[in-house]
Length: 280
Image (cartoon, rainbow, N blue to C red; front, side, top):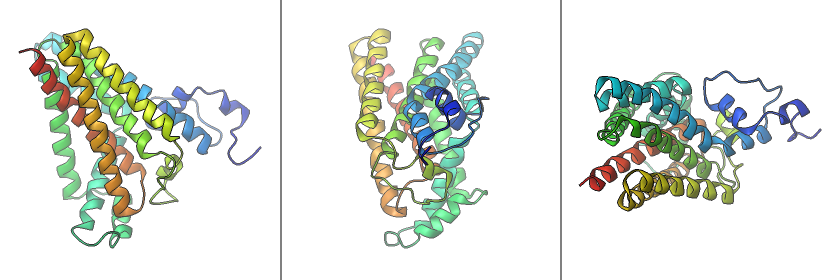
């Protein structure tokens, strides 16, 4: 058995189950060993996992929104259930990333990269991390609530598409050729392993799905707008990832989490604008 070969019992574990085991707090069968093969299989299923947990959170929010008649409350419940399923791990990464990047300030590239990575690894949270959490969560809640003003039952699909987009961007950030910034970290297990073709295909699939859902719900204007929303979130996420790699020398698990949450918020903002335009 080579270093990159899983034991036979672990090979039988479906990729979606592996992904849920790594990236959620939902109880899953334990692995006897964790290596790059398991990480690659888990990452491949990450957009699907995002879609499913987003739908689950959205369903809970839709029920509350329907019972209360308040779209914003439904959005809040959707986000709360979603983060309970995720264990808040991506929000933690968001806060750590902004705290670390704040250490870079306006100094020359790479000058404070080591310090930034140390701050990301620290268990506490700073002012920039708190500010990032507040701003992103507010954007997520308000934008998601706006997507369900006409019907609370829009929440499951909107939530699912947003979380799928956030996870598909991680595939771009983990593609072959982008090194880990901290080789010994847990995030290093998922860095530099996703084939570029698979990363691109996953993002295109989410765009097509968003366009199809938009057409089904509200027609061609919504189809175009939702497709563009996903595309914009992916492009902005990819550009931001490139900037971070330039600053700290690679990616970390915290960076993956920050990308997921920010791109999710961007997608929902785009969806909210799209639905408002389509309803006119």
